[in-house]
Image 1 (cartoon, rainbow, N blue to C red):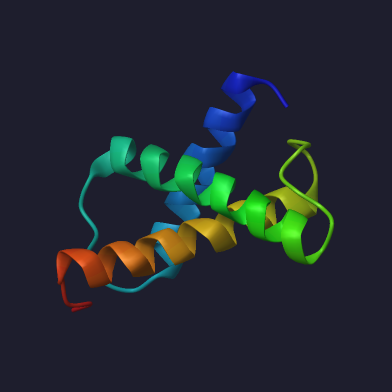
Image 2: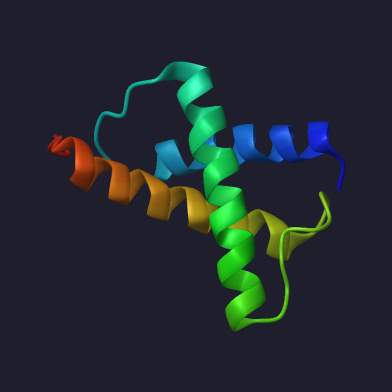
Length: 87
């Protein structure tokens, strides 16, 4: 997957993760992009370690699920670090 496709995957995955997780997360589209890219890298690492598949193809369901799952993990960890409540 190319660099721009990975950025687009991260942006969309971060936005989906922010929509799934209740609460108020700031950051706008740049925050979604950063969360999604870090989440896609984390999801790809976890997917490779556990399932033998990573984030390698843009139009692959496993890539999207791993990227969104990783983004959710990043948002949860960021919520714990920043001390924000979910209301």
